Length: 261
Image 1: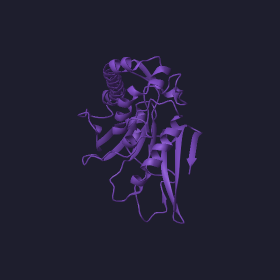
Image 2 (image 1 turned 90 degrees about the horizontal axis):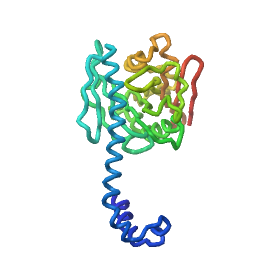
Image 3 (image 1 turned 180 degrees about the vertical axis):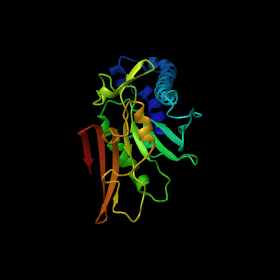
Image 4 (image 1 turned 90 degrees about the vertical axis):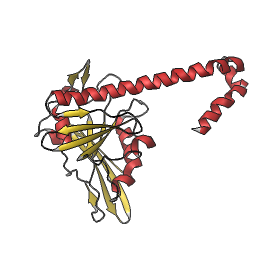
């Protein structure tokens, strides 16, 4: 942060760089405060849009009778929604940005009240395909998922307002439903394993079961019978002192991709 601040301040003396953009040092100095404020406003609007998209989906779950209530967070370092699920308990949804960032993949905590917890990655970046974004996030958070002393998440979700649009085509478009003003396809959901220091395979074959994925995907008309074809998984395998990772994404019957490293 301090390095970026230092760079911005010192650019005023870099006349050659400024000249490439058609600016004098005086023009740069005069425009800087207003530009920073405009950037802050743009970022705030972007965050508000992401929050609105996620809240629309969570409120749709409530309107459909799939959850009893949705408690909005006090927005801050951890943006956590609390869902009351009939006959089950409370589910925590931790809103994050793109999964390749430290804040979005590592800096989070599981609430004490949550029976299941999910990271929901709302990623606008088009620098990579969704699967690559997810793989980077999982590799960053792997040590937390493997740590038996860490109360970790039960799954991760990759989904935002670009999904299903021409910018980010979705293979699950046939399951899209109208939410607010947008036709929204089902999220990409990945179940993560329970940590076990003795096991050599941790959800390597995707047998780990969770409750919330079925509730979430039922909003999109995916019933219990079809559910396994739409829920991906993250798994680990210990062999000869090494840990391998598998990430499987599922898009419908007979449609899936698997990444292993």
